[in-house]
Image (cartoon, rainbow, N blue to C red; front, side):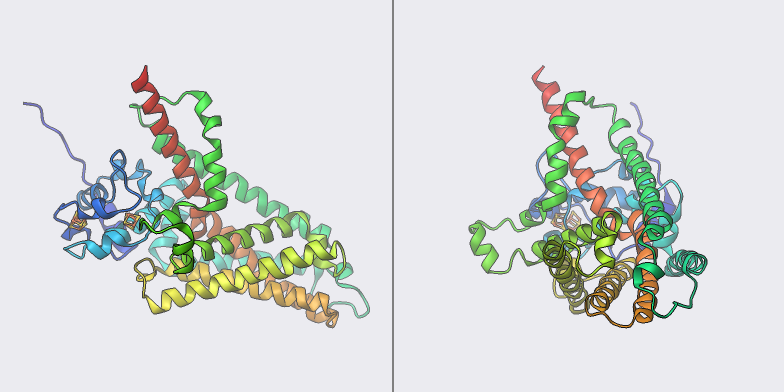
Length: 388
Ligand code: SF4
Ligand code: SF4
């Protein structure tokens, strides 16, 4: 009789335990969690199998698993688990593990393991920004000069925005390729026809811009409007509002910086989109999530890792200093005020973008839609091969 060898990785078990609050060792595999999960399907059942894989330290299986990206942490599984093993929290911990597994630099792993590593990484980027500012603009704004003369938008573009965007583009693309390699290419049981990559492309765009699976977290039979008025979509809609505001501001500062430094170019579009929509979205969204995390009333906000706090605080401070700076420009405050406000804003914004976007919490914004896309590709390819 043949034997199967199970390769247990004790470091993985320790790591997954350290980056979350799941008690996966308590799981006795009753299957209730997968049965009650509104997003789990017969073909893609979770989180029961992840509980056993984590308990046994099956690193390869976990690193190639896309299902943690399909879970939106509604918490139904945790609420119904008879052993209080917190399967929803395990899926969260696995997302943290996967972020560090896709990152070939090892930085994510360090940030998830130690809050001090995160502080140091953020500080290093802030120091680089400070030095760049000192070299390009100095610290004594000449009286009588305008903000644009003191802080040239071209220099901000050439020395801050574009190098950062290029860095993020290259690093994130390489991590996503790593994800693709581990989850799709390594799976020899499925061969994806080239055409499918294009025909399924809509799911990537659709899920990125709607995060619609959040809405499916509630599987009650009431109509859409009833769930809406009962507040069942509050979390989803607030998350969506925050994400769209963030993306709008990111695109704005990278490609339309001139607008931000002048008070009257394209006034209506700028005022409506950035000064109101995006600012309200950032402030409202971050405060909402801070309150949820502090009150711990819903399952998905019961446990907070240090990276969750750091991300939300930096996002709030970025939005807050950005709004104050923009108000200083619009209401024509003394130029030296704007000059220093600008520096403070960059000292928060850049560490957040350079560290949080590729290496920490923010990266789920890219990995989630990619995970759903890859899972769809595999499922469709399997169905096609059955028909042949
Ligand atoms: S419900 Fe709890 S005990 Fe049962 S399989 Fe899921 S995690 Fe394990
Ligand atoms: S948290 Fe919700 S979506 Fe995630 S596995 Fe549990 S029941 Fe499913």
